[in-house]
Image (tube, rainbow, N blue to C red; front, side, top):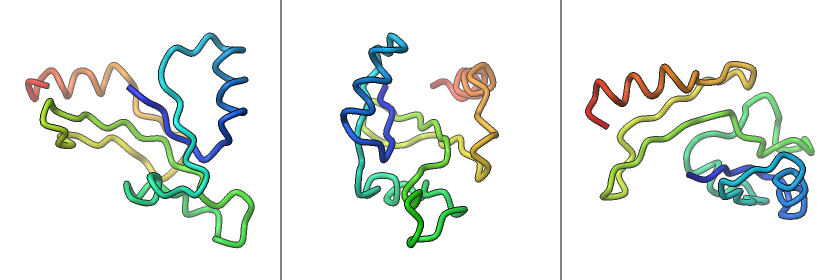
Length: 94
């Protein structure tokens, strides 16, 4: 599991230390990964300092590296519920 944001590496390090985060945090400063997965939050235009902020998403990836499920919303306040995601994956055999 990894979390990708457009925050700087130092921001990730401080956040992980303060919150005892054990998952990998990836810094995508140019929002290249975020854009490739069509996750750029459309609320912020390219001229905004907030451009590149991602909408929350969960991707399930199989052992061959294929994305099998994508759970996203366009509103950053709406987050996929972990139990609902797990239930869908269980039913799909994932």
